Picture 1: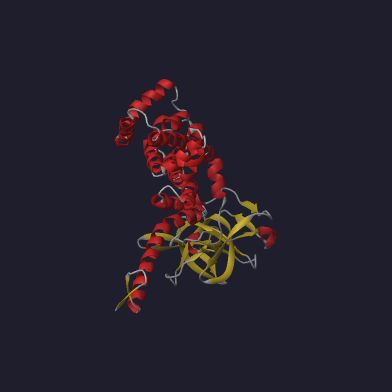
Picture 2: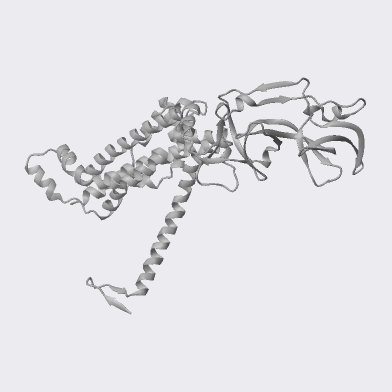
Length: 445
């Protein structure tokens, strides 16, 4: 069933109409999510800590490790990290095999009250632990009466008995190891690096275990310092300033030359006007790559090599902008201009007081296109700006360098990318209504 509306359109009726609307909005929302998702990922990654970049499964919301201050939980008063030297019986070759894990002398490391430690949890333990030392020599012992059990202790706590046992064809020394208040005989499976964990609630409870067996406790946290680091420490600030300067100069130059040229070709009648316009418009069809070599030679002769002037002056003129303004000025009725001439207005007054205000949609569109081109320009700056001239770089070159030098600091790379893409997005959002108006306008409001 269908019905005819007041405007003469035939529209579906009832449930069918509702289904069509739901499907339409569903498709639009799906497309929106696909388009917006990369930007959300970029912003999220730019606010993450370096340790949270490669977590699995990946998390969209930035998180940071929970830390505790030693003095606030009593760690500084009660905990001392001590590394002891293992004693071996006479004639044993233990020191020769595992000597790389042992220290020459005993060392004591006291904890400062303002020192911070990451917080961890274990699946088999309800306590929350602070990781005091993540470079502890850990020995894994296998009890002789229960080979399926592993006892992890700091190297040097077990006592060697002098007996040996054959395990898979190899002779292993037997040790006396304390486990859960009892002493058992065990052989040492391997030595590895682990961590010393101390309970936050009861600093007298210590645990030596492998760090990757513990789960870091995290909380939601945004690291805005990434932007400060990439702008200040990675010299992106100077490149950003150069890009803003170049972009503003190019946009202003293109607007002025396009308005003047478009008005002259649309309203001033002179000999050869149409021929000049066709030649000018034909330059749009010439690929820029063809003009690179002659333009480079011209810049070299003018002494603009490695200079921001080479990024501004050659692009202060645009045939497309002139064509756009000419077509818009042609759509403005001549009666307005004739009335202004009768009132004694000059050409310049007519242009800036009458034509330009009416051409705001076209001017906004041209300014947006010029801004995006100048802001995102990469090939010409790469050709004309020396790679060693950091003070003359623009943002596109700085981002390429940042991606190479900070390939492991993905958060900094994304922070630079967010800085680079934010201005074009804002410009488009503020100027989008002029695109619609430019497409529908006839020159008079």
